[in-house]
Length: 440
Image (cartoon, rainbow, N blue to C red):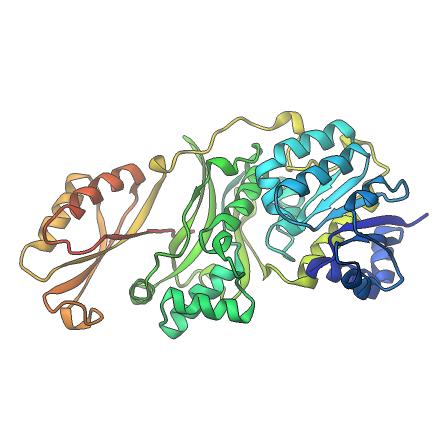
């Protein structure tokens, strides 16, 4: 059987990894796919850099549309990133009858509905294992391995940059700004780290996983997104004292009222496996009604881990290209015509529990007043921790930190009572509120 011919749009870090892994493991991949998979053309503006990666083994072009127009190419791999140009090129490739593999989570989170509809109409495949959690096969697990299950919830550490920062803050007791600079020096964080530290990258990935878990369209625009920039070293320290670790989680849950889709820092019990995922590693927990709890762990980025996922998609397409479109695995795990119309719940309706840190005047009656306001809102307290003034970072001899863990309550209810507490004269700084997830 003739080899599958592939064109790479972009041949940077991931593209170089794809080229190298295919070259190194060609025999093994051919045995798995049943036919060879060959990169025959790559595009990059800097032709010299592209040539340094692929040598004479593939054609090098500056215009990615030259690859799309090439009638010999079966699969287009989009590794350019971003929204606009990538969208145009992917849609053009689909219109030209090419199958598409992409590692671009931002593209699919924002334009996935349009892209999947175009691919469905044209009868081609769009595969995106590398778009979520790098080399971890979480997309294939949601789309195929867990297909017998009614998924109840999923939660993931799906951004390595933020996990590295939080691990360093906990291990070394450093503040956020200091660790961010170190992450940039080591190459874990971009020069502009906004997408990572503000939770946007994780929200792109969570939106894709949510769609596949619950059989709904991708709804990134409705996700609640909160990053890690406001986390303080003392909160990480207090969480540890209380038996928790703070992680930036992408969470999606099925509830009677609708689907939750949210990204934010969360306290996770230290005994949970996911709480012990450190450095730049990724992990996703999925809870299914039949299988129970499953955990997927590994490298979420990097040249060859991401290339591993891209090549897995290439192998799938090589195996299934001759099959009727109706017989292939659906893009979002559920048949196209069977996608539901459930909407993502607004954050105010989400029910969870909370960690609260209040900097308050060290005087009689403050705790009683705060607990009364919580009780009036039917919010029950799980634990209270108070630090004496001389233990509170040396800031204010007559102030103390009051840490409260609550039981579950609705976010809107918590918002209202926190506004009341914040207005108390005895509260001397903005209240820190971090959600708490038991993941049980």
